[in-house]
Length: 625
Image (cartoon, rainbow, N blue to C red; front, side, top):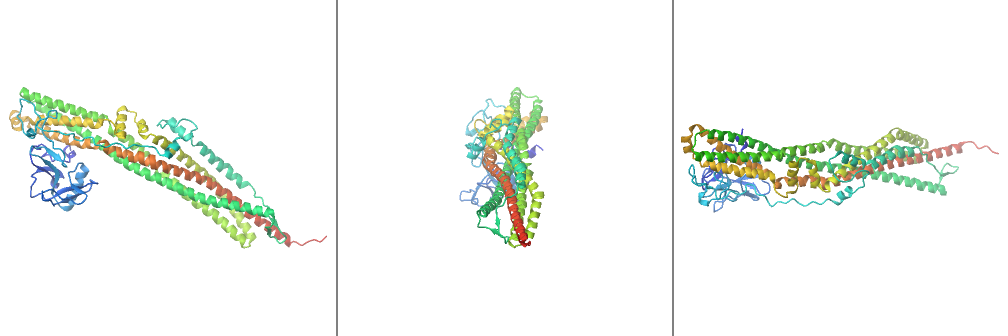
């Protein structure tokens, strides 16, 4: 199980790194692990090439230039996998092309020091990290107990040096500042995770709720009850006299109402479009956020789980070391084993310090908030559905009823017109008014909820890096998160690993000072323990390298910038404001459409009724005086 966590060097080759002038080969038969081989092996004919911009894309080449250097396709370069995923991708390409072995860009020099991707040579296997020797000593095997401790490696570079990556500067948008400065009914605008702040933010939307109640429960029912007054003059023939001043004023008022109705129809379509665009934008941003957050969570959990596995490997190494110490040894060898044990204990403490930073706990807190946002998807879907329903029901119903009434009146069928208008008004009062009240209230209620979300998002985004730290109360977590948000200062998490890494190299080098044949003669019952200890130390070193590469700020900070400063604070705030504007406008325009519809229908009914009355009056017999 422990060996399955190592994806680089095969166990057979992991303790034999000091061979000079050798190359590394990835072998499918070794499950994609690496082995040491001759650089001119005629049986290995292909070289591994990675895409310069996307290292998950690998290919193979069997072409070389006059100097023997591999010639890769455009945008590809000779390379060595630096992550498990890259190694798996390369192995997949080899399986697809039925190629069993291929060189990777890793080789040792004349001193047995290895370099990867053309980097600085360093000794993988044996040596004290705290002493600097000469090139000639790298890879040489010292005596069992040297008279003077020397490092058998010329240089051991930083396994994961801090890159020149800097977190980009952030400035809130004008819209964020505008929403952040909105007046609050109670409380300030400093972002917090406390319930009081959330309550105060919700209270800030009360004016919109009250406006919705007034508009929906008072204005609409009130205007539906007001009777329309008419000043049309009807002559003896039952025809409206448009020449009178009253008639002209009446027609002018009628046109104004028609324009108001048309504008309300147009406004509700615009409002629905805004609400749809806004919620779609929010949906897209949340999709980006959850995707990137899941990526960050996976990185943190993987690193934490790998560190827990590493801690277990060190524990097994300690057990083997205890068994080695049980052998009766010369004092010099005993002292050497004690130094190895001290180094392993120190490395174990560094891994424990790494685990105390609890990247898994940080990942869990981030995941919980991401899940909460993702679970709001059904609310966003409901918002979009409401917009479509409002457009469909009211625009179609109102336009259809008015159209039928006007056509009936122009066709001269006054009785039919009156009948249809009365039926339309009855349908309006029984069905459309209650529905309009509900949708006006619902639109402004949704607008209020989006207002709360906009306020909270704007308050967060006015200074997101400082505000996010308020989520993490634990001092160690807070310090860790702060570094990854800013990339400013020392990466304590990586430093714990780095110190443990060098301690393991020291222990590995010290163990190599005890020759296998000498040890076999002195302690035949502990030969297996020494071999296992050497394998465990190699595993610890490799595992530490993998974890260290994953916890660099240049690897994690871009995820934060994409999710929070990009999707939430820039695009997300804009989408929320668009959606807010759409739902508020929808509530107002829906009320306007409802009111003007009522006035239009009543004017049509009044005009038709008076025409009918005039005609009936004309048909009555006249009594002479």
